[in-house]
Length: 297
Image 1: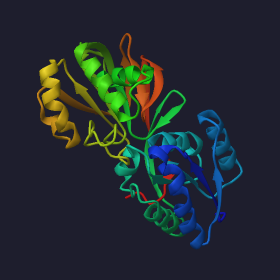
Image 2: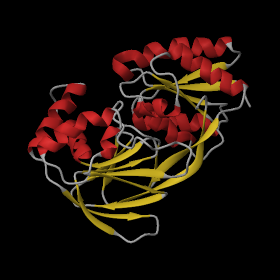
Image 3: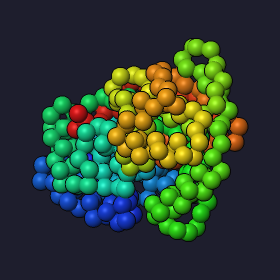
Image 4: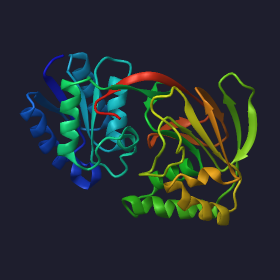
């Protein structure tokens, strides 16, 4: 393995924490004997192009510095290759890092974890989901949660996380069940009405909402959480339980396990790792061992 590794940096992650995190992480890695180069991009498309070029040129590792959005971009560059991925998680949510047991908002600790893995076992193979040409590490969301994302993305004010709180309140006022058609592996197509359907490779999204709390990164399966039709009162009562994962015991919630999931519903956008995939229908499949993740437990 080459001693040159690449920091893939989002300088705006976590309200500027990305820029501040790159330097201490790079210092730790250089002190460990690695040659470190940094890749930035003018936008997401340019950043991904540069990351793919680094992987094609034989970098010893690609280290995503930022939040889940930056990690998602990095996954597109390294998935299915032999290049290992490191994560210096300093964003707002950091759900992928949490699922893997990696340090969060501690760039020096994250840098040490990456260095130790590169000098030791070379990382652990973990699963990814794939929908079309897009890889994802945490959750494919659809229904109420994706409509909140849709509305939040259209809003100009307020900014930050408050935008999505306002979007959630607006979507609660318009709450209605979605008519889904769901196929799990080779089973028959199921017709269900649901508030949302979440397909989890990892357990959480949205900064710690454990919607698919039992999902693991190394079992070759998705956990599929289906929340049935809910009143606004029921949804508001159940919602806080999502942060502990105890919502899974509610009678309106059903969990399935499958290696492939097809979702179809009119007027619903799918989001994976917080990024829009496009309108349903979508098919997601698990790809066991799709990436070597440095320091994953």
